[in-house]
Image 1 (cartoon, rainbow, N blue to C red):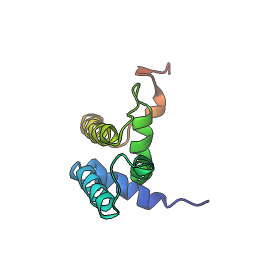
Image 2: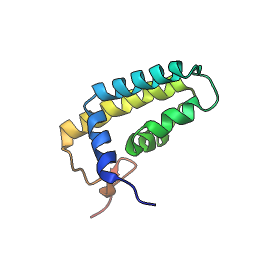
Image 3: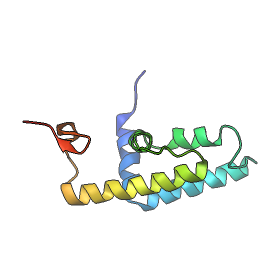
Image 4: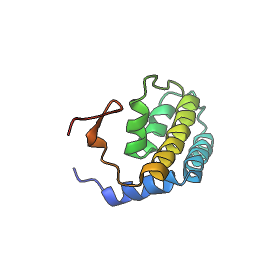
Length: 108
C-alpha cells in the first residue's frame, strides 16, 4: 500500500500552526452532528483518531495516560500540538529524535 507522505506532511505542518487542530476538531464536531451522531456514539472516537495526522496520533498514544473519551482525545491532541510547536521553536524543525531514549541522550 502506498501512502501519500506529502499530503500527510502538509496536514501535519498545517496542524502545527495551532489553529488547524482547532479547525479539525470543529469540522469533526460539525460533521458528527450533521450525521446525527453523539460524541459518545460507537465509532466516533475511532473516526476522530483516524482523521488525525499519524504523528499526532502516535504521539498521543505514547503518553503515559492514554486518553479514553473523545473529549480527552481532543484536549490531548491540542496539548501535543502545542508541545510540538514549543519543541520546534526551541530546537528547530529537524531534530534527530533517534539520538534520544526516554529523555536521555544515547551515548555517542
